[in-house]
Amino acid sequence: MQMPERHIVAVGGGLFCDGLADFLLALTGGERPRVLYVGTAGAEDPEAALRTYDRFAGKADVRRLEFFPWPPEDLETYTLERDLIWVGGGNTANMLAIWRVHGFDAILRSAWERGVVLAGSSAGGICWFEHGVTDSFGPQLATLDCLGFLGGSLCPHYDDEERRRPVYHGIVRDGFPAGYAAEAGVGLHFVGEELREVVACREGTTAYRVGLEGGDVRETPLPARVLA
Image (cartoon, rainbow, N blue to C red; front, side):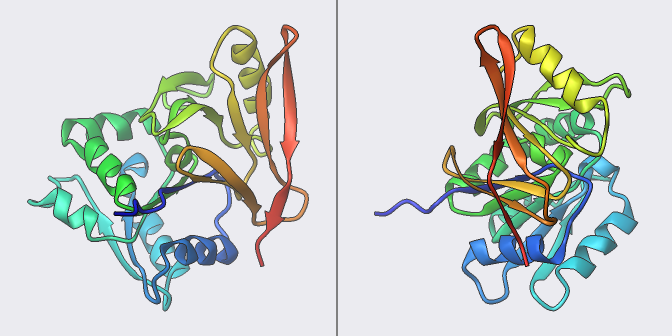
């Protein structure tokens, strides 16, 4: 039996364009994909949910997952019947704590292994990695252990928040796991655990591999395909 391809698209935050929405939907292979929006990191803000509905309007069947006052009775079935799970931005640490209490982290892994496309922006981008750079604890930025579906680390908001680049370089220099940095509206598309391509909403933006080389941090830009 052939195993389904496992897709993750981690976006650097700050921008979500129609081209990116179309790219995500195409990965599902469906004519009208079933999308699940998860806004836990943003405290389930209804305006963010409406923006997501608008982005996929006419192209997909969108539902949202809420954990307050409690999640759906059959959370696993509700999740696994979707084709694409889109995770919004916000407080990553709070989001992961809620997910783990309800076993949603394990459900997401099951979804990924079954071929459900996992994607998200900012908090919804770093959550898939082993580690992330986050403002969950304040503007000073900190490191965070995440779900670990993908190895290494991710730093989002690389061009739209001025402290991200120097902080990421500093902690990598001090021994934090190497990984990737993504600018606003830039998505890292992984198949399995391998990076397949980088996509972008705007010309002139991209993602980077960031790691140590010869005792210093090296930042390598990756070619990005601009989405129409």
